[in-house]
Length: 183
Image 1 (tube, rainbow, N blue to C red):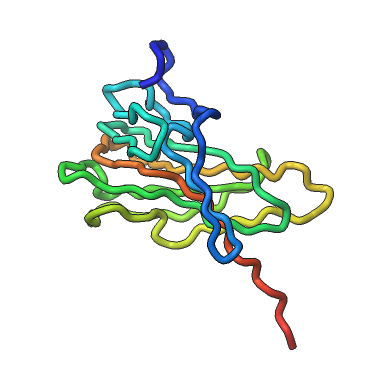
Image 2: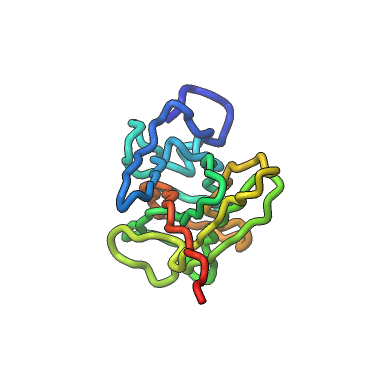
């Protein structure tokens, strides 16, 4: 839990290190929960945040407004897959009939791309959402100056109370550029 404060939301700690792995020349970056912004995350009635800054999961106790966000400095011309590693506790509730959206955009004025996933039929163990790949490409236009990727996981539309979700990390995975078609 953060230092005593009247602020109910958890703000990302810039001092928390991310984990970077390189495979086949492509970088995957993982953000632990404390490197993410979590609405109502600083209120122990709603979230149980890890005491450490490592990859111990943040656990959703109950909220009706799920919003977990982060930012990543993208590189011009690169394409990234965005997602979250999560699990559901045995007593998870409130996920029937609502979808969790993972959304991302490039730049403050960018347009969101999104994928939705249903947690109605809970999986066991850790799993990745969205279930379908969400890729986002940073424009390689030399006049473009805002390469920051804004991403998040949301369920804010149903108004239902939900709980029992554990968030292990958010990941930003560089994906290979599609080679130009040859004739």
